[in-house]
Length: 371
Image 1 (spheres, rainbow, N blue to C red):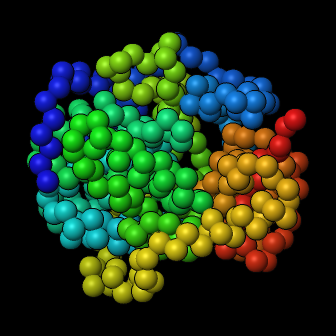
Image 2: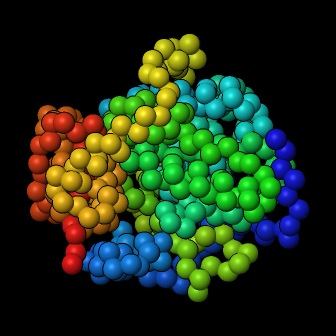
């Protein structure tokens, strides 16, 4: 279906981020000098008192040398597995939408994955697809100005949303709701399909695997996502015609590994073949939301008042340890090699780790409930 949206043109974005322009264009407003990071304890208190996480930025975690060595090791060990998942997802996307596809990664965890999918399709199909990274915020929806801008540039385009992984499926639900609202506002139906590398929550249909495996980009924050912060939506900072905002951490350029990550994984594409990729994914694509069902049992067992304080999966557990106030970490198997960085972070921050064998995911982070 072709977009027929005729509104005031959205201004082009200014260059931002540490990726090459041919890899991705960030549809974000640069908030450098306009917003400061909030102390983790104060931020957590404000969020649990009714403030919205998108109105403030967490302090960026500065990893130790031991932790960075774990990142490099995990990248070496998992690069091929990540490449297989990228290839599987890319083949599904291209088979469905072809050269009209516009890759739309959700900032920021989706950005390196979108870069990899773009590179795979260029190498394997000779198709150089446009790739943008945009903001989506739980409780606030998707950046509609970013959507409108992409349709200005690609009126015949078929948008494919991309993220890194699923947890309990919160962003999957936000995306569906946002697409429904966009249709009401503009009369155009977006495809709310979300493509991810790992879907341990069983809540999407386009995925590389449902194994909760370690995607090395989940280990870090901005330094593996183009030096971009979490996205921000605040009325005093974001005008009516602006994109959602973010900080660009140029001061962290000496710690930047975004391009190292995508270059290392991309180098494995030459070993992949289309027929093998589809044999790797025997699971039914049906979304059963099994992960969310399990989390409700954990919520009841531990007396957690808000299920949003439970963050399942390796990626989400890492985020809890990097930028929230964790109460405890649940793991399903202490011998799982994917948990090394989780256990190191938990030790560094003095967070207790409990074995919970019935866990669908490899791990689960529980945020401290503040009175």
